[in-house]
Amino acid sequence: MPREDVMKWLRSQYMPHIWCPGCGHGVIMHALLRALCALDKDPDKTVISSGIGCSSRLPGYVDTCTLHTAHGRSLAFATGVKLADPELTVVDVMGDGDCTAIGGNHFIHACRRNIGICAIVMNNNIYGMTGGQASPTTPPGAFATTAPYGAIDPPFDVCHLAIGAGATFVARATIAQPTMCENLIKKGIQHDGFSVIEIVTHCHTQFGRKNKRKEPIENYNFFKDNSVMKAKADSMSPEELKGKIVIGELFQKDGEMEYTARYGQIIDKVSG
Image (tube, rainbow, N blue to C red; front, side):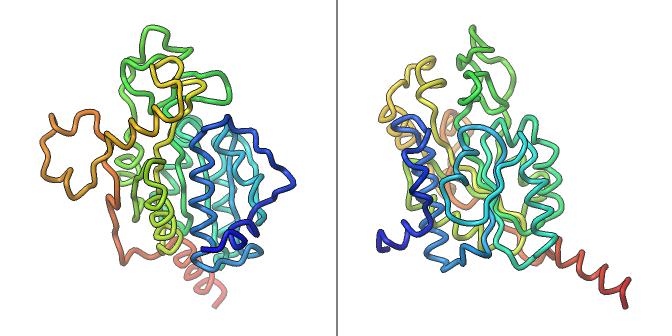
């Protein structure tokens, strides 16, 4: 893909970005831009929504229709946009805290509605921007500013949560598989229903320096060494999978009517 095609989607006047050098969020943004290019999307008919946090700065750098909303509420805004104009391509980017803590209720209800939004959850296991507090995905025993002796709360599995709540396309990759990130985002955008793409990334500034992975490359290698494709994971025991990150397409359910289509049927019935 020509570099010029990707650059057309960037608001280069806002560079340099605010992310720390080596942050995985840049990998995710590049994967999203390449996916939008590959799908030949129209920037004037594409909307990217976000909440608050490091991950939520992403739309500010993308030259399309963007919403920087309240913490945890981005899916509510994205839902309103999609209902107002179902023909729009709507992507919502969230961090793990943004999605599963204050935004948890919006997340599970977007899943159950099966609305045509592609949700990208940028999971770095910590609240990076606001001080390094433990999030709902912080691994047990990991250190954070609010868990100086190690986290004790059982973490959410974002993908299991999404499947249980009714999302019809669910996938996961890490920033150590950038091509997979791009391909899964493409499939998520093309899916006719609510799709969740969890991308496991890192915050070496907050999580890493407290948990012996303070350099970006240490986190990259950790993801690379501990990622397991779903096809292989299906034949592994729970003991073998302990500490591993299962990646790939985890769930797809076709044939479920998308929410705005159902909503349109009601409008037609009432107006007819």
